[in-house]
Amino acid sequence: MERAAKKEAVEQLNEVFKTTSVAIVAQYSGLTVAQMQKLRQQMKQAGASVKVSKNRLAKIALEGTDVVAIGPMLKGPTVIATSNDPVAAPKVAIEFAKANEKFVIVGGSMGKTVLNVDGVKALASLPSLDELRGKIVGLLVAPATKLAQLANAPAGKLARVIQAHASKGEAA
Image 1 (cartoon, rainbow, N blue to C red):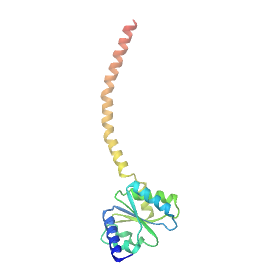
Image 2: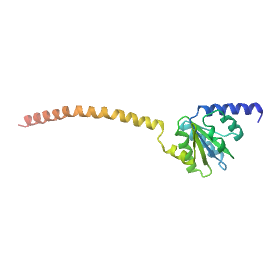
Image 3: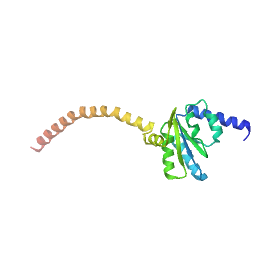
Image 4: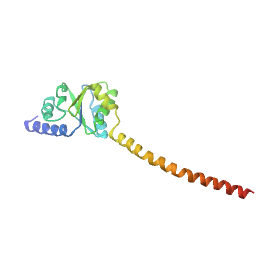
């Protein structure tokens, strides 16, 4: 790799690390190209991305970012998964690790907080941002729905009583 290409790769990685909220480090030794493509596809669908780069270049790119704590984890053939949603990358990484035993999660970082494997699993078990938004909207709408049901109930009962009297009058 030429010096200019290395410099450009470091700048691109640095920009990714500055804008991400979570970074997961995993070892991928022994995975096939098809498996790596599947991982990249799953990450992309979840709104995350996967980067494979030389560890030395990645460590240089980490300087001055919030996720600098993952530097010591970069040993051997590693892949770095990043996402702005703190749950997306960990969730996909954990699911992929369950299906592929050669994909081993080493740890990660959420902002300046260092995560071990258990921390990554804990993040993956949390609901995503969209799921949380849906729950909040459901909680906000529920009282209005109940109020509408309560307001309509007396009118409905009154209509049924009048209908019953009208039916008796027609029968007699």
